[in-house]
Amino acid sequence: MNFNFYLLKSFRILLLPFSLLYGLVIIIRNWLFDKNILNSSGFNLPLICIGNLSVGGTGKSPMVEYLLRMLQHRYKMATLSRGYKRKTRGYALAGAGTTALEIGDEPMQFHIKFPGVAVAVGEARMEAVPQLLHDKPDTQVILLDDAFQHRSIKPGFNILLTDCNNLFTRDFFLPTGDLRDQRSSYKRADIVVVTKCPPNLSVEEKSSVAKEIAPLAHQKIFFCATVYGLPYQIISGQKREINLEDEILLVCGIANPKPLKNYLSHHAHTYYEQLYNDHHIFTIDDLNEINQKFKDILAQSKIIITTEKDAVRLMKFEAELKDLPLYVLPVEHSFLFNEGQAFEAGVVNFVINFFT
Image (cartoon, rainbow, N blue to C red; front, side):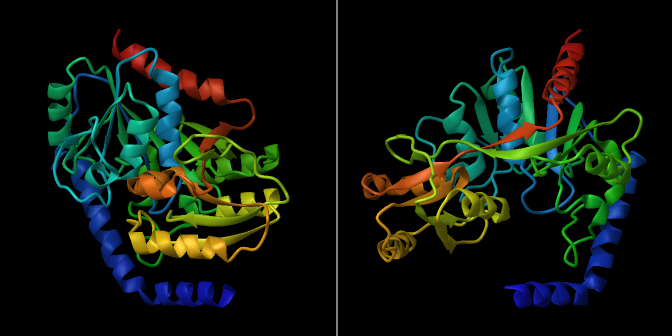
């Protein structure tokens, strides 16, 4: 595994000329927006953007859910996502019969967990926002999922996420690094959240990271750890704990499964992997392969664990999953240093001030 890691790293270094070209394009594009040569447009309602500067998982979906739990009882909420890896194009609003293939796995996850929230997708967000407001005219606040780099639309409030283990300050442009935007773009954020921190992050480590990011005077910086909830059976919803006698088959197709693997290594006897590419569309052959691998585990206490994103793509096999011990492990953000209320106050104050 280490050999493969270093081989990949060496290969990406060879792609440096492409990274320099890509970076130049991004820098010119941002300059054109900064000088108003390319236009950014806003809307007459609060738009909150949740995004990052890099590709890969920084915890955008759990942050969208955090904000929905916080705001849905105060305001009529909507989310707007691109709908990555869906099989459709253009604008779509989730309804009763919508599937993950139509809107993407993350929007489908929002639709299932927050039935009172309008969930829409659309690549062209400038066109999708008016369509969403036409379909849901009582909408008061829109969360723009993964829209930090989409500068044609101008949010009123930007929340920028960065992985504690892969800070944007230490990264480089694609394909040598993971950055899809220049590092200095962090200055557009109102709040910077450092995600996936160790739960025992020290004050000294916090100060060191904050100093490295160097937030501007108007910016607030917060730190989050990843918290896993109680697994629930994918069809029945029945919950159970993971214990040290369990042998687990981990089935997932997410950008960064490392935190999940670390969690299982500390809470289960052992685990086996059945990993897929990010946003993988499961087939019946995949399900048969999962079944066979699970049968090969000889332990008496054994279950299958998957993520919420993967679960919405597996639900099309509902009949086959009824008797399978396939459990979904929910994930949330937990703010460190008792700063959750300060984060929430910053978001709520933006919305309140918008309407006053």
